Length: 298
Picture (cartoon, rainbow, N blue to C red):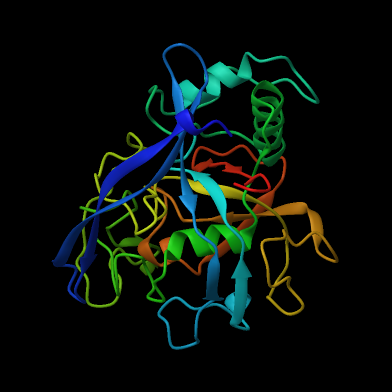
């Protein structure tokens, strides 16, 4: 890596109390890698430091499901991760790079906007994006492993959200209203003692809430679900306890999704929440972000 592409970036980190009221705002900084996609567009990634964390959630956490167990200590080596989900502008540029394994639509998204996240892209499409970006830059870009994604989302926290014990729609784009169907509550719009909020019913510009986690990542809760590299497994039993994606024994046709979306409630936005979809799925609430591998000596 050439040093001129690395600089410091500043961001605000917010935590909330159990009622969802901001109780701390701090300014932080991180190393930022700026990848020029063309003369006018940059992909920004932040340095994710190595460390360890406890993956999953305890059964006492609201919204817990058995696929979030057993909790495990996981050791993570350093990597770089895009500050936001990949935008439609970034997708459009990379989709014009030479095809490697499959064609990419230049404008696949339902909710159009250059700074909105790209969505309606399958897992296979996201992998092709990474392959083209790697070929263009001569660096290794890929989808994050599920272990990397949760480590990056938590950023040193062990609470349900990196914001704290709850979340609000002033901080993230998710469905903050109660939905009922046939007299039954099918979406709970608040979490814990937090408040109900808004339901935007669409994506928003990446980073538009202006708050990051302690690693400098935006939109890790809500906005769009994010593809990970791993096969789907119904629990963490026998899962790797390092950066590696889990590509043994599971169902290769189903891939892991993380982060929740504008189309789901706060429980599905928790740091520990896991879901899956067919690798061919290209739904309007699914996007992705990328990881760049750290080269030896960097």
